[in-house]
Length: 233
Length: 233
DNA sequence: TGAATAGTGTCTTTCAGACAATATGCC
DNA sequence: GGCATATTGTCTGAAAGACACTATTCA
Image (cartoon, rainbow over all chains, first blue to last red; front, side, top):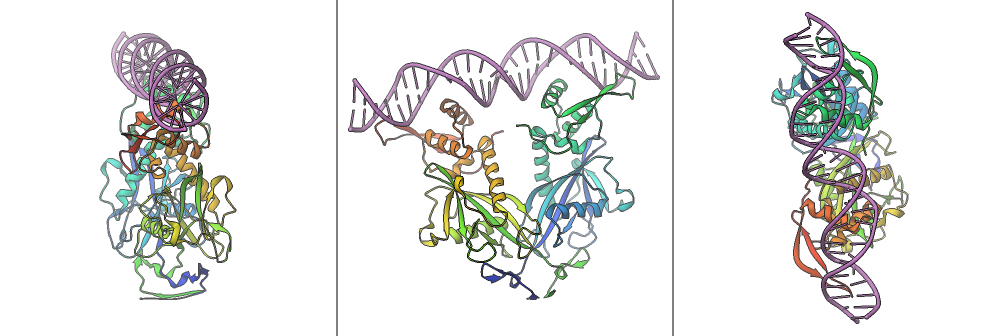
């Protein structure tokens, strides 16, 4: 049973405070690339339901923050990572998606590089971990569905935006960039066609510096012109 | 001040019922095509704020319905229209987007044809009306932003999906279909190129019947193979 | 000089876009 | 026959995809 005392507002002729409200959470897909694999950040739940199960980082929205701020705050609280690329994905709201109570989840996708990554002190490594997407554990709630949705979005945006800036360091070689594409798309790309396409998009600036680091020809280094999402059309 | 008595659930170590929750609403962009124009359904508000201002149809989510069901229900309640194509657009949640209280709006885009349209008895024509998108009145809240977002989505999906099935009758001519594209994209298309492209997408079935109706050559009638969203890729 | 990775060009096919003449039915 | 709309094909340029050899550095 529900009873509330609240300085309600009249909305459409009735006091909204008289009705139950769902809880609203944000959940975040944080992708990164490490060891030549696409990885997803998960946190281990220490409460029921799904106790000891891995889940997406996230939490409840506060009354005075925007959705995007809530996602950024939750991510920072759980990982120490901030100021990274983030975009809203989709809102999931099946009544029974959370067995406890009605929770609507507004999901975000975030992208981080190793240099963004500052979990170090802030997180407990047993509780917060990257998993290769090829070897994800069972996920709590409908988080597997959210992951699949986000992966599709990421794959598709690779094709017509500069979104990979979120996964690459400031300076990188075209081979490194191609590796990012190959890992996300899970297929090999032709080197000549890849370079032709990327360079024709006109998103990169060559630095005129070379990456030395092996018994082989050094590679030209590039950076993104803009580290904000751009669409090619 | 807020006081609540509630059979709260423990979530992440605290009782969510102890915290204020935002209200969650759905708002719907219902597009249709009439008189060669793209039109949007609006309802006139009869309460503050924005009293007498036009707004998107919508309302608060109930505890036991999914987001999609809530959008369908609200739309049917306000217009009598049901069983039409609908997709989730985006969630808007700036803390001050509603001056009364915190309201997060999960928005949907719906498409209707004249035959879907049954406002007749159910609605008050003074209160619920289609407006040509070229002549929209001032909209309440951030509804103009929502409209712009939805229009962009619709325009872009015309290019790589069969989404126009939502705006066309069961049987139609290629010229009628081209008109739908032209109205939404707000530009003229070349008739030969349009037909070449549409037919190559392989989404239509010719009916072998002709549309007679004027002092001129009759046109072949087509129907969509599937009246569900399909992507070309 | 051998190992390892960087860098580059051509051909073919496909798709988008510009463009105009013939076909059919009704009056 | 005249009017109104339906239907159809070619050319061109751009982009995608297949494909293999040369260049540079270091050990």
